[in-house]
Amino acid sequence: MLDKNKKRYRLRIIVPAFPAFNVYSYIADKTTALGPVWVATCANKLNNWDVEVIDENNLRLHGPRAEFGADHEYLQKIRPADVVGFYGGLTSTVPRLYQLAKFYKNKGCITLGGGQHFLDENTQEGLENHLDYIMHGEGEDTIQELLTAFENQNDVQKVKGISYLKDGKVFSTAEREKIEDFDKYPLPDFSLVRYAKIKMFPVSRIRGCGMHCEFCTVKDEIRCASADRLMEQISLAVEKHDARHFFVVDDLFGQQRAETLRFCQMLKDYQQRINIRLDLAVQIRLDKARDSELLLAMRQAGINIVCIGIESPIEEELQMMNKHLKSEDMIRQISIYHKFGFMVHGMFIFGYPPKKDFPFKITIEERIKRYRDFIKKARIDTIQVLLPVPLPGTEFRDRLKKQNRIYPKERIGWEYYDGNFPLFEPDAPDTPEAMQEAIKQIMGKFYRFRYVFMIGVNVILFPAILFYFHNIQEGWRPWYRQWRNHLVRVAGWITMRGWKTAFKKDSFSDNLQKAKRDLKTVKK
Image 1 (cartoon, helix red, strand yellow):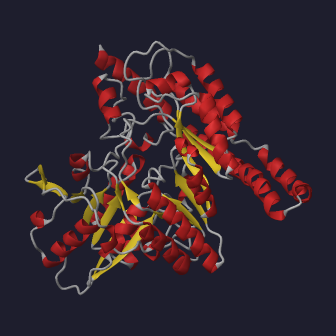
Image 2: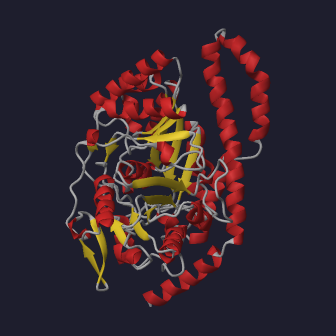
Image 3: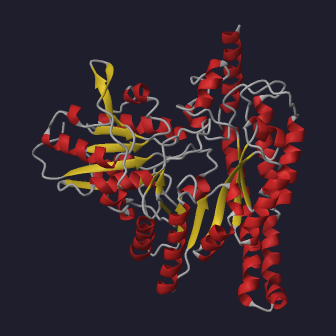
């Protein structure tokens, strides 16, 4: 219950810190999650509420740091929160979320949680771990109705899309309708993110995805805002925060082709008007390489990086995924992106288990070799190679659960669910240790210290490259791509080194051995 004598209340939304060994730390302190900012922006429109977002992965500008994450004791001392919301969209951060929920619950705060990738599917677990309420689905309307109910001390049963414990059992209110009209909501206000220094601003136009991948929880029907709406987000960030770099978080850029082309033209015209060159990264399908009109429009709009889910370069594995592609065709399509001047970030899933017994067998050594050969031939600029993650709420997890292959959560907790750790028993004769070592080898071969010397070579050769092309603009592009790639590979090497150091200190190896024994006992 809120104190009725107070004239104003405070909502604090927290993005929990990644585990110390997470390899995403390099990019995490340069951006933030879009969902919490959007929810906070809507809550901030209420008359009697002050709202802030604390992203523990981006604590700069003299932020209240603790040994791990933020110093919440200090925050609660200088700006006491009445209600605290937690972003539960990343499974690996859930243990930290529970830890903070307990802290704030003991301080007398009302605690909320939300996030499709975990709390929607683990409602009871969340409520039993110090969360008073869990918000399901999109939170823009739910947060306003819930805070208003708290303020007026009304019954929350009328608030749609929430769950809470009632007499020891989970009680859920009526389901909330999905948002169709995005224009009625305010644009995300990044100034609510305190202590952060955001260099890459997340923006969005499309919610949902029609791909229905087995390993993904996003299976909503596609709902799109207008191109104007996306353009407004970008222009507002430029004007208020002097933003230059953006990441369009939509799962598949290019859906609603005509509207996408219109957005690209709007963005191009905007940059010409303000005489500032912006830099955008998007997620896109590989087969969009066939659409030369779209690629040209994207490049002219300032989209420089394309993130592509390649999954696997091995044709037999692609057949298991019902993807009828050949590695030569994939390399050819990637080369088209390169010809248009895009930097390609390739995302792979190493060792994805087939749905049924598949006659194709391959050793881990051969699989590693094929990955390396493909990455080299395709000249991919940056890579991300992860192990399959059986996320809660996915068909993939259900399948492995029925086969009794997932390691017990008591041994291998949620903090390991980030793609860098083996979470289930692989197909024989592979071992979980070998699978993990494989992604280290692939990534370790790609991100290496030797590229620090190549950066120096790039600088020395710069005048010669300009002389060769006889044109600064034409010479700059290939030079910058090489220089940027070498810089990123050195940064990747530093990150990989830090992850390996943290892994040695962690007890995962011991937990894995115990988990394997537990699984064998259950199967017997």
